[in-house]
Length: 58
Image 1 (cartoon, rainbow, N blue to C red):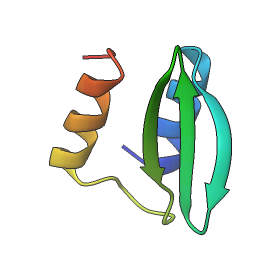
Image 2: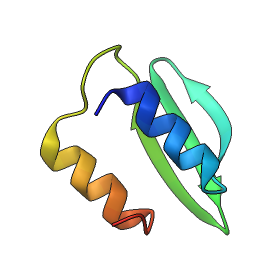
Image 3: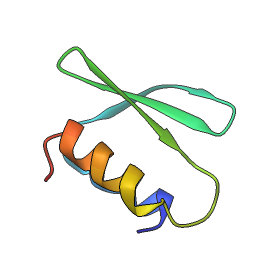
Image 4: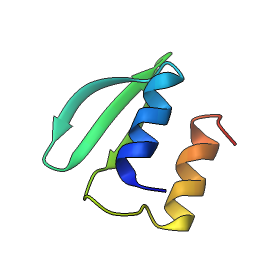
């Protein structure tokens, strides 16, 4: 999955960008924080699965 597609998916599910630090977007929802690296390519499978589990999308 492309990093921008992951960011779009998270934002559609209620996550909001709190700030951007370099190439990392920090998102918040209900007091939880998640960092999504935006490097212009596919997110590695392990990292993608971890982000999806922590955000409740998997």
